[in-house]
Image 1 (cartoon, rainbow, N blue to C red):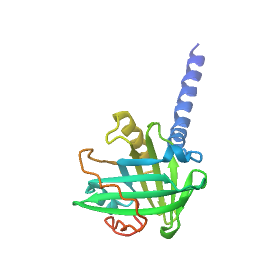
Image 2: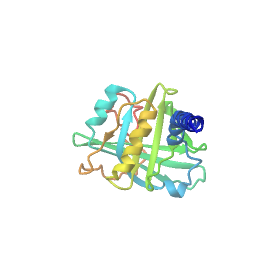
Image 3: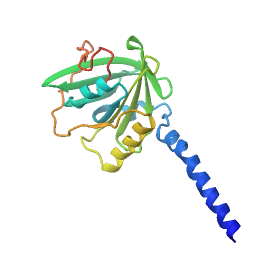
Amino acid sequence: MLAVAAAVLLLSLASVSCSVPLACEDLLQPLGQPHLRGLEGRRTMVAGSISHLPFMELLRSRDSATAEFSNNGDESSIFFRRSGRSNGNCYYASYNVTLEGSSFTLDDHNITTTFVHTSCHDCILLKFDVESGKRQHFYLFSKRRQLEEMEIEEFRAQAKCLNIPPPVVMDPTKELCPEQHTTNQKEDKTEGESSSVCG
């Protein structure tokens, strides 16, 4: 009987130790190619993290940020627009991007963007790998300004799996930038360089 109990204990410990990396694999699982209709619309950043600490400080000072996807009539490409508000000023950028499975690339900035799985029903979770992964930006956008604590906790766990700083949770009372739909928009340079994305 003692031998059976010991065997059960060893098996349970083995399963726990094996589940730790699997949990991160599950948490960071890329989506399949998203449906354009499901992407469409404007969402507000509710939380974000950046691997580069000086940019994290700039993110902390950000009032708000948005991301918007809209159909451009092509089945494989979409418009991606972003805005950010800091110190009362709004910054905009717009891109025409082509979906490649769960990713798209911002060629002019050497940024690969991946849609990551999230259990939040109205969220889009984006991981930006800048300069072949030298820097990572990780942002959770939602149609709601404030999420349930469980949804934020999931995002915190995902950021931890990426070994990046604990996320900044945005203040839902801060004003958003007005929507702007022209393609000739001012680049956001508040994070130290023009290739910063959404933060």
